[in-house]
Image (cartoon, rainbow, N blue to C red; front, side, top):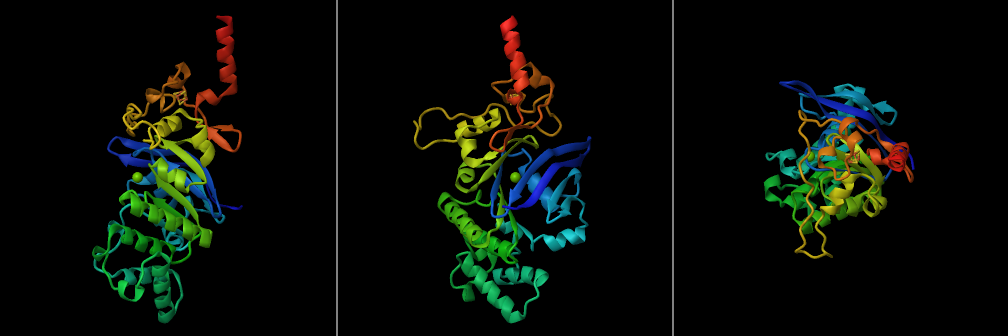
Length: 335
Ligand code: SF4
Ligand code: MG
């Protein structure tokens, strides 16, 4: 399958009162046609900043400092605002956690779907009308002739997210970036929306970058997973390998912290001790070391690189360094 987006060494900084701080650093991954790549991590880990950087939707204090975002041979990181606006919504679309903040309360949902078609497509009014009805049907909003005249507040949270998906898919984008698309919804509606996304992906071959803190959603949706911690990729893996054999201590801790239906509910839940460091208090060495059960001397002093492992996986952990392990073994033997 062909790669449709390739993010290489992406670094985004924010200007603060204390100068520039790195929000994300050395984010690297690719996504192929029709694939779902999940970006997972705790809140504050840089998942959303990664998504917003790709789309160049950062707030004004943020800017891409280095790295590339290659999409159809264009480096989005260097594209002008006008050019990126042509791509946004048409070739790459985005949905967010809270549809209410993206939908305009003063316009009907039909008008808002129409609006995106007007911006990007050259359709006659009749064609556009048909597309609106077709899109509403596609996302599971029945009775489109009537429902198109509804205002956002007249819809449930799940229906509003369906409208957002209709707007996102209106121009048949190659890539959909979904940032916590179901986090605000209850479990049943969440399952329906995820099912809808999967169905539409199967129908149109859309690639999806799914930003989530929820490993349940990852297991359900992803082909591959990028685990981010403190603004950087710590593990990259196929979804099955990730759950069956996590390669990074942070991934392992995340997986252990999922409440499981099949185990003793009274058993204490594993919560990873400590929290994601703030941008101003980045620890030395491995950024995870204050919270890591395996940390050794080198972890406190030197930041590990992303080690490439078998089966196209990678892990940013000193334990994956073969020569280091050998040296350690040697020291044990000679002591
Ligand atoms: Fe833990 Fe060290 Fe690996 Fe970091 S490099 S995850 S501190 S073992
Ligand atoms: Mg977020």
